[in-house]
Image (cartoon, rainbow, N blue to C red; front, side, top):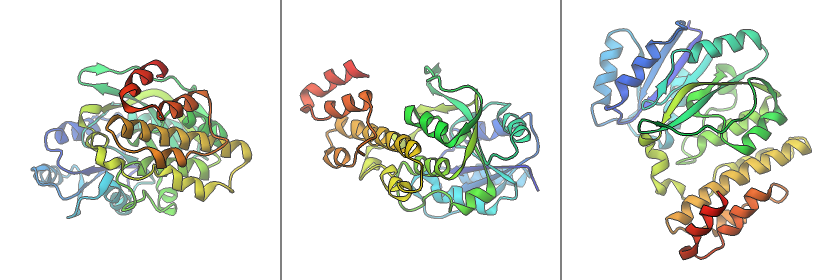
Length: 306
């Protein structure tokens, strides 16, 4: 039985798959298994995975119908895993060599925590995008974690390590419900469930934006952000201060989707109606006002309030 199970869903990633797998095998911390779930690839990715499986480098499972967001594939990998801790990784990003060792060190120091988060950095081509500085490394209470998320998405799929037992008890990612945003739904759900998490401010993964097909496809913006459903679940289960930070977090995500919709000419009426009272600050209010501006003037106004 491995300490970590690294779960990697794969759908048509033949151009990046080998590089992403190789950076896993270069980890300083060696006690891990790799579980790959092919999600119905048609571009040769399955053949690459089968070669790695034959070499004894991973365990391979297959799904025959691609699932939106890869959520079902990740859930299958978690179900088949043997490690005490689950680490998720995308087949088109980069894991630095200390990624797993940072998790292992934090687990040894904070043994009562069930979610560990390492910082990530976005890359556009060969350019590192500026990082939003958050809190210092260490233990965060539920309130502190929600306050942090209300400011920006500090949890990325590649940067989280969660107890397998806790992941399964929460039902995993919401497969079949959302085309996009199901990961945010799940991580916010975890923050609402746990009393504390651990955050490491050291960057250990790189998110390569040019490979982000899910976020580039604006058809995935249909409907409201999944966070709207999450608030209905936890509205009366949190303390007042925590509930306000959850409202702020969800309003931020709802408005983020609305901005993307506005930029491509989609209606944002339902998004604005879904905003939660008591979960607004000046920045969110300005974004809300900007979305009411007619399209010809929208881009000019947006540039002033970013």
